Image (cartoon, rainbow, N blue to C red; front, side):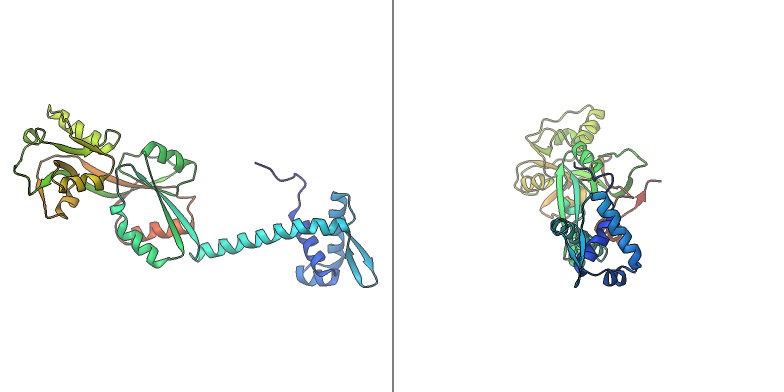
Length: 300
């Protein structure tokens, strides 16, 4: 990455720009609210630093040297970029422009946030939202590199002074199957004898399930392992086996049979963000979640 010159004085270039555009020390004094002698001194300082004559006097006032005309091309570009940056910053404050990048754990869907995303985009139609789906480890790496603004994880997140952890949802899981299937199950021993549709091995949901079954001296041999919750639901509804899904999802699908098993693991969904490195758009989105009473617990 190119670094600025050690002797770069932006104020001198600002004064040069105004003098070059007005071609008048008196007019520049009025625009900049600086005395004419001070402006003349600043111009001399810049000429000294650059070892180049920038202006010369004529009967009509002051004119730019050829070197100054060439310099003005670059200074004007820089000046315009700075003005654009200020304008974009102001627009981001007004939420007329901006972007949020949200990282979500593999296997999870956006159903936890869909209603809030829809409301947020309705309130702020000029903002954009990017969803990144990856492993928790990779998401945390991107988060620490500040390429992701917010994280939605269903894994345990260690407390850290550098970021905030907020518990969004605590949701129990359950087994379910299509009511069209010709069998009924009510125990874990019966369930593991049937075709099972479960999350893949790299998900915390799967690891929690296997730990629970191991405590009951049981091992599963799945017929399908999927990395997307929506696929587990879809194939369960298509009579391909017993699915392992959030209880709320099962209840929301009346064509599925809910199998009540005491003590099955819960999925805890956490929101993670850098409290001191949030864009205005990200702050607005977190505020929406807070105002909707979605947040139930915050780490100290």
